[in-house]
Image (tube, rainbow, N blue to C red):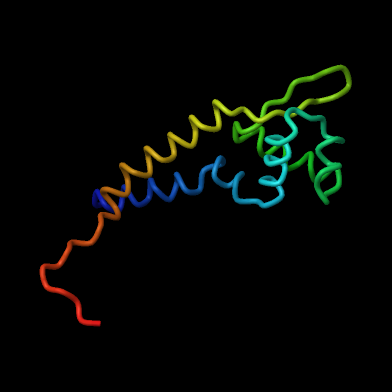
Length: 119
C-alpha cells in the first residue's frame, strides 16, 4: 500500500469518526444550539425546544454524550445535559490537525501550470 493510500484510508476514518457523525444529524445540531443558547437543561426542557419526542431527544443526547460533546450530571431524578465546550474544541482541533497532515499526503494541491488556461 502506498503512502497516499494509507493516508487516504486514515482520512476516511477521521471523517467517519463518532464525533463527526454526531454532528451530521440536524436534530443533534438543534439540541446543541438549544444548549448553547439556554445552558444546561434536563431532557424535558430540551424536548420542549425541538419537535422530537423525549425518547428521540434522549437517543440523540446519548450519541452526543458518547461523542464527548455533552456531559450529563444527575440532580435528583433529573439528568442535566450541558455542552462540554473544552472537549468539543479540543476534538475539533484534533480532527483538523489530523486532516491537515493526512491531506498533505493523500490530496496535495494540484501543481500549478506555468501556461495560462484558455477559457
